[in-house]
Length: 248
Ligand code: FPP
Image (cartoon, rainbow, N blue to C red; front, side, top):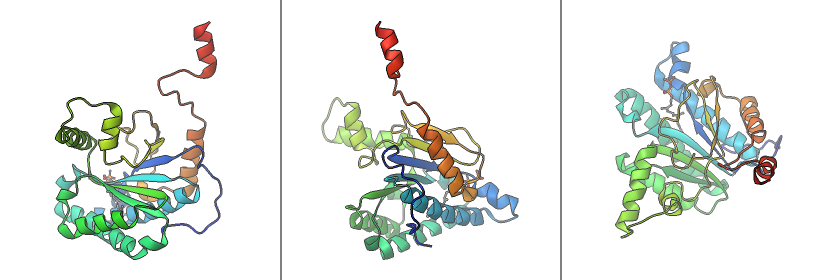
């Protein structure tokens, strides 16, 4: 399936939403309900991933981040981890084949040291070859929010800095090239962040749904984006009408 949709856009969110991040939860339960191994759930999840990325692109969303594999996911059964890694390998192969024909920058967020040498080399080649594209897909792989903050602090300390500010830290994150997420969507029914984009989500809006990741369809994504557009983001400040009232 082509990663980018050729369908005409049904809406354009480009002026309101820069960055949407997804916690792709529920693959295991999707498989269990069908009497399938968990690996089959992740395979269905990888198909959903392609659909969702294509759809977000068709709506003009410049940056999409997905939580593919956390620093904690290594503790899952070996067979399951191998299944997810196979899906990622397949994605990397497709990317290496199609990188030049797509307008998509791909960046892997996380510590690449735990990947195999072949994966590391492919990931670096993909990042290098796509670095000048205008749309961006961040794949959090061996990623943890706390780990990222610690990594950023150590990167800054290594430069000799003795004091840092928020801008320094943002610039030292794996996501330095991306704006902070406007909206974080979590499928699978749990109401938690699970160590995802801890620093970057300070003012993000959240959309939680019971829908399992492989079942997430365009219609619900559209609903989540519309819902976001109706929210009042105050970033710790006040709405203009309330501000007037306060200063009177
Ligand atoms: C969480 O669901 C999902 C994961 C830990 C893996 C997500 C990986 C994919 C969707 C495949 C990624 C592939 C590419 C190409 C990016 P869970 O297993 O925790 O589900 P459960 O809560 O129902 O058990």
